Image (cartoon, rainbow over all chains, first blue to last red; front, top):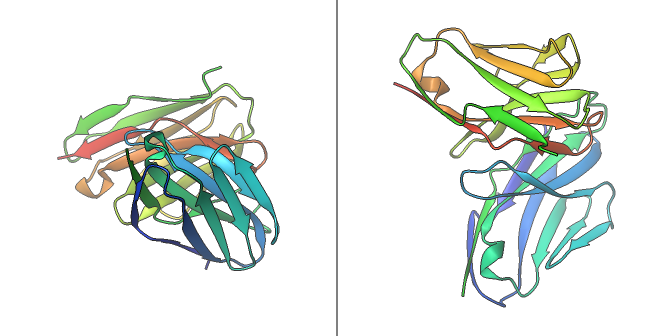
Length: 112
Length: 111
């Protein structure tokens, strides 16, 4: 059974204080690992897809990396507008219909 | 370009009542999904569709039915609502199982 565990559950940062979120996964052959951002009362917003160990993707202050067992979402010099819940999800190879297995998310709060 | 649109956004039902949630996407995606999101449980797949006229069960299908009569629409039905179905429901679509794009959600309360 595919599993995704995110840590920490909640993270409070001061503006400008860089940090990382962790996503550990077990999957029967990884097709893709996805990061989403979710604001309160909104649907998940797609950020990145990573396909193979060693791959990295960047968008503004966010950088996602992937190893064979985990992914990190690095946040550099965060701003209050980066406050949100960050969700990690995996898709197994051989899943013909694109099912995503999600972690429970990390709630990020950035204080000014 | 609206993406994925869900209606309604909020709904309160009494136990035993029925309702239909509507999802519409304008990205010409083949695949569509219904997820539910509950505190401490993450997002879980209810039903999915890989094309017009096809539907299949996900992880938590009991108590729900779906239909995909048109490519752009995916309907989720609750025949007899139960308090355990109180949740936030998200529709999503993807191009052949790649990145999924989500709607804004429907917050359903069953009393």
